[in-house]
Length: 270
Ligand code: BTN
Image 1 (spheres, rainbow, N blue to C red):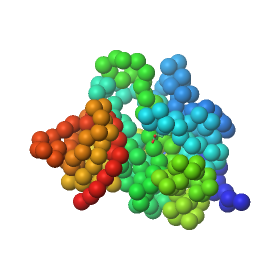
Image 2: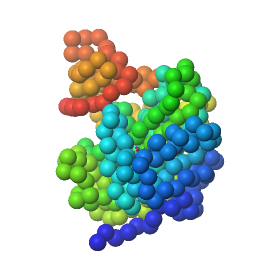
Image 3: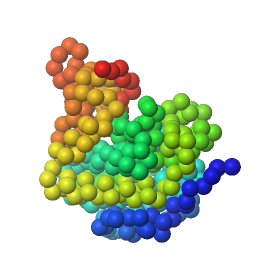
């Protein structure tokens, strides 16, 4: 029998929350298909920035690249935040990086874990994935008027709670630390970090965010990676991120490659 470590109700979250706006309005569901789908619906009907959809279980949790996100009841954080940044659509990837930074920093601070980020937004501990971010916008305007950032964190999962396919690649706070964690303070810390970085990005640009991301990178500058991007697989050494969050690789034959979106499928470093 799993030892419980507090349920994640809106009241439990709000008791700990020290944000100006994020997470003040919570749409809570014991079970839902996907919190991102619900948040996109709410955003489409005018729900203001900062609204949060929170669930104890998702039956159709979605990951990046058409994957599913296992969301068993009561074990993880399944939450989607509504944003209205009004900035150019080409900068949308920065919000994904920002959410990953907020999650990694909160795991480090609240759970004392060595959480790192694999470009663009996989939060990993010891090479295994502990959290993911799915940012989605509707429409094709040059500026983003509504966006949803979904965050999934594996908190009190035991190995038996992961599907066989995930077992080797996934981990949780409980697996890494040996103790169950209270999800409300962790989510509160994620929302606080996210709100602070969001305000700083809109006011002062991406420099601080990119520096924080780089400090948390699982594969440092100079590390060799294979990346699956819009033009297929590319191999090279990481040279950094640009102002829009794209990955810049040094190609083996010389020169650089810019990968606007995709994922690292293999890494060998230093
Ligand atoms: C990934 O790494 O592939 C992204 C995973 C994102 C999962 C979260 S859980 C809350 C929100 N609702 C969803 O359906 N997906 C995101």
